[in-house]
Amino acid sequence: MSSKDEKNLAQVIEKISKMEEPQREAMHRVHDIILTAAPTLKPRIWYGMPAYAKTASDPALVTLRNDERLNLAITEKAAFRPAGGADGSLMPAAWYFETIDDDTEKRITEIVRSVVE
Image (cartoon, rainbow, N blue to C red; front, side):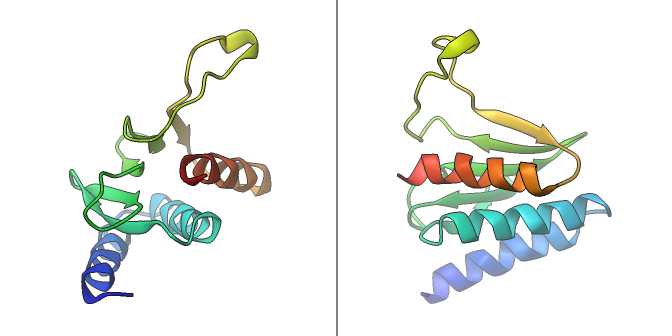
C-alpha cells in the first residue's frame, strides 16, 4: 500500500470514527464489507464522505454517507445495468440502511462486487 493510500485510509477511518453511535458501528462494518468484497478498491474522502475508487486518483465508484440516514451509493462513474423485472430500465444506485444484518451484508457485498467486475 502506498503512503497516499495509507493516508487516504486513515482519513476515512477518522471520518467514520467521528460519527455518533449507532451509525459509527454500522459505517465501520460497511467499510469492512466493502474492503473485503473488493480489496482492490482504494478508500478516500470524496466530497467530505468515505468513498472507494479503483485508484487514489480515479473517480469514486462507491460512497458512504451519514445524513439523516446511512446511505450506500454507486456513483455515476460506475458501469450501470438496468435492474430488469418490475424496475425495467431503472438502474439502482443508492440504498439506505440503519443496521447491518447477514442479509444486508450479503447484498452490500453483491452491490460492491458488481461495481468492480
